[in-house]
Amino acid sequence: MPGALPLLGHAPALIRDPFGFLLSLRDHADDRGLVRIQLGWMPVYVVTTHERLHDLLVGQGRRVEKGRFFQRLKRLAGEGLSTADGELHRRNRRLIQPMFSKERIAGYSEIMSRNARILAGSWRPGQRVDIYEEAAGYSIDSIAMSLFSSDIGTPAVETIRTELPVLLDMLLKRAASPKFLDRLPVRYNRLFDRASHQLSSVIDQVIGTARAGGHADEHDDLLAQLLREKDLEDTQVRDEVATLLFAGAETTASTLAWAWHYLAHHPEVDQQVVDEVRQVAGDRPVTIADVPQLTTLRRVLDEVIRLHGVTFLMRRTIEPITLGDTTLPAGAEVAFSMYAIHRDPAVFGSDAHAFNPDRWLDHPDIKRSFMPFGGGNRKCIGDQFALAEATIAVAEVLRSWRMEPLPGHTPQQVISAVARPDRVPMTVQPREPGPTAGSH
Image (tube, rainbow, N blue to C red; front, side):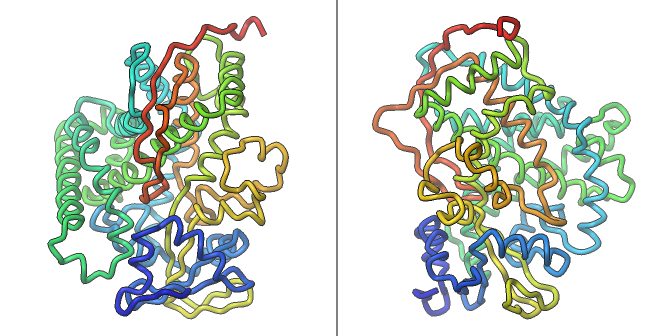
């Protein structure tokens, strides 16, 4: 990749125009879908096609570890599932996987549905709201209430609402910059360190209170399930709680905000979604059993996640690997951007940058090139939790409210764990009652 600067490499270009930079990598890749960039003085090999990404995550998954990007996150998530490697990762995944079974998610979905109805009931006709902020509040409350089912988590929820957005905003800057810059007293370092300390401290307090009060014997939330695992010490419980918060809050909030934004600008799709929700659920609360039947809404969510997904992740080879016909040595840093790969015109068509949920009907084969939650032994453990949460929230809110965009405003993408929107101001208006499920 041309344009590397002495000492800093391509980090300034990545930070200055992250989306443009990530999309441009495909143009400089070789015919195997690989291109080399520099972050500081460190070479990073970037895979730019779905085929190479599948090779990396699935074909070579056992020969790579998390690498530099996730090492830089350990200040936030310690040795949680997102950052741990090797046997620690395998052990913790075995312990935590049952917490995201279909039966468990069905229980969490009751919290999601209740919170979505509370959100829908909190607005007034004609009120102007920032739909991203509303989505973030819903998402944080839903994951926090799944973690902490009792009042024990109240202090944590308030801290999470305040500090988690700060951490996520600083995430890529921290990971892409040379490590020696971490010690400089610049603004984003101060904000990141303060927010990380605040979040870790309040989670530690909640765990201590829970241990002392016998929380694990009286409740069955995610915290109680973690506390009952005898192989997990309190520091590991904290790391897993922080990981679940970090991984689950912003991604769902971004998906919801973009979904409501696109549906407001595509009234015909909006009406299809509302008709489907009314036909499936009528006037009763949307439940986990309804989620598989809301197929139009699922196409909308897939399209949103395709357009605004995970921005930039890395792996490190622990032994030589072959991607295509290229061999990379042990210790090589390998990066990928699902955001860029999912906008490849060669796969998703000439309108790859446009919102078109019908593409999933017209070209069902593109699902093979769609890896929103990763793949292999590192595939996101909470994928079904996230899809249920987003589906229920969109369905509950749209059944009651029609959203009108603020004239002249276009949300801008913000670089973070995913390509989230900056502001999505909307005016909410009551939706006309429709026929109930029994009349279809």
